[in-house]
Length: 437
Image 1 (spheres, rainbow, N blue to C red):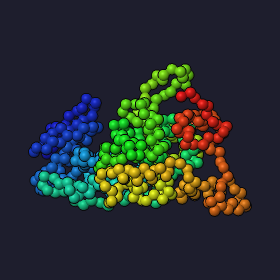
Image 2: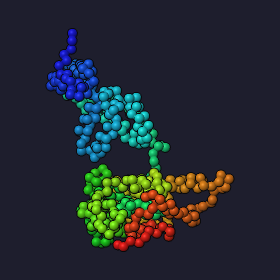
Image 3: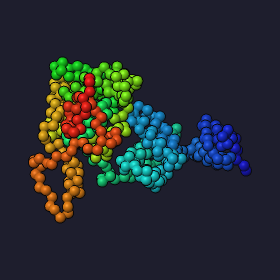
Image 4: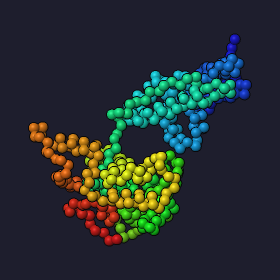
């Protein structure tokens, strides 16, 4: 006896599609190669509906259906855009599979593909974690019209190990700061200097607005109240407290743009007596090509913008600042954290940040930096010569702050901002020419 094939239609692009209603349920799918493939899919779905509607069996949901349901029911989640992006990478591998067939075995191809593409273990785990979350919801919370969960039992999804595969934070020393800042474009150097004196995240710096500024006359500085939508977690507003250096950076860019604090424009290379043809624009990201060129030029090719924030944390601890104050500066959540900032708390944060505005001769080194120095010294020394004894208190041999090679955009001094120049030490032979202000 033949099967009823009503609801199968050819598409304009030459493929086939199914569009049919059965007992109030719409069966619709596109992109079949031929009529037979569309027919097999429709027959399978009809059989499944009969088993669930007539015999009470658990319906079979695909992972794609579960992923769509997850996105639709979690629209208010802060990281839903990130989750949707991660699901796009997983979908080609398991999207068409029934939920019961999603496990370590069927995810192996996804894992191998991502690792072959050079993705870090932490990045791959982020995709696996969202798959695990959807499977658990399918087995515990999501139910059909008959009260049955979408999945009888969620499998255990194995994540990749992070030990030995995760990049350690890489704070910079004062000497490295002096090498980094003068080679950056002026706008990027000011932003980096602001981060090094406030500890704020780079995305907050890019989106910092004048309307968030609040004057604190008792200290002669400004603070910026960052709305929750620009704060990681989006739970509450946070304050960016400026020390004297950060305040100088803010005052130096005041008036450049009506809305954003940090902006940029392409300056004239010739006929500098004329106004630039380009208006100031917001900076989308500090991790741009200029940052990447300069970090390679100073010999730190893996330096992240976020490492400047780690630098602030390290310098605060070296200055003896209490952990509770460090947490307030870096916006780390603590149980003792209040939901309202007082002037006394702002004074405390300001005093802490004033301790890291300049090089005071402290060690300012992390364990990773010591290991890097040891590898560098070991590479220069002969195997037969013993390592030079150094108790960490004596003066080391001075290294040139900036390479003598001036070729290429990243190998020449680009920052002529007086404020930024005051924060770095230039070699005499590389002093930039003075400009009329």
